Image (cartoon, rainbow, N blue to C red; front, side, top):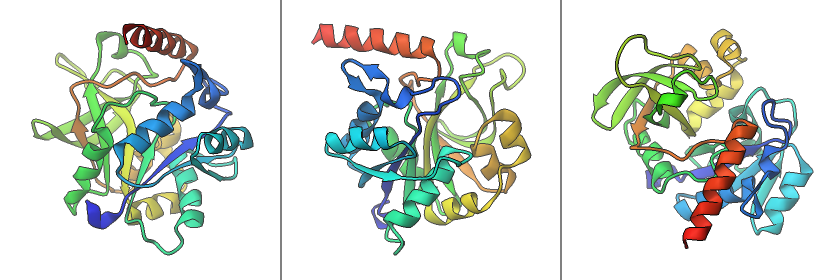
Length: 249
């Protein structure tokens, strides 16, 4: 992993379809993007940059001491935004791995970024990601993305499909996808060279572009993961959890 010299890029835009302005949503007195940036910095896997199309987001990140890269607003997904930012940040190709930490993961568990990157130790893997057991209320929730996968070891899976539907069919546990992608640099460059794929457009899930193009995605299985923020309901629940955590200190 050290030979890949990872860089973490957090895509953040204000025009979120389900929760506009969520990058700057207040959680425990600070914008959500700052919580995500701090988690990435604490992981210490490499430099951290926020890639955004919003000058307001860039100013907030820079005021906190972080680095921001302004990108155009027309990208189809966060990983496309990464591609633009990386070309400007690292034209020499010093970073052989690029972590897409989605900006709606303010309380990602410790060790999560390292777990995703460790999957790239296998030269057959193009992209490493994360999953955890889905809670009962998430099984039928289209905002909770499910991973259909083949088990390789007790804590490692090979992704076969991602969907917003309750899958796979039948009895048994279901897995929730966690919004982290550790790209091998060549895989990211190939990904951004491709147009959005039919299944990506249908499911509104960028990782399906990679699978449709024949790229291999493996996932590290976490015991649990903090909730992502996709809706106003998620934001309200996360604010309450942050308040309880602060009160307990």
